[in-house]
Length: 166
Image (cartoon, rainbow, N blue to C red; front, side, top):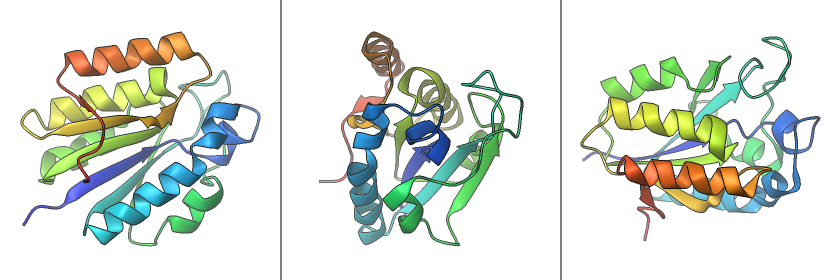
């Protein structure tokens, strides 16, 4: 039986409580940690992307750390796949999704209008027939209008709002 997949995008110390952090990102911590636990309980896969700089920051590549933030870091397991990237979308995540069949894919994390949007487009490209979800409660942006625009775009490419978990 195919398993559901939860992809946590760029929920790193630098983007939550560090120099690129913002309050809405910090507010996601308990929500993301609980969603990870729910996916594990459902037998799902948990994946992470890690931005090393160069996409959503004016910093040079490899300037950002790879440490996830708070309880999300505590929920990460050794066997979880992590895709390190230095641009908005992860080509390695795209390749993985093309090779692996999941029952559904849910994207979460930061920043909604940058890396979540880019990876949502890549997930849809890799898996045109797979149900893909974004729960607005599990993504954040420092700019609310841009976040809403990103969610609208994702809906236009048939990414559902909410979660496949009941």
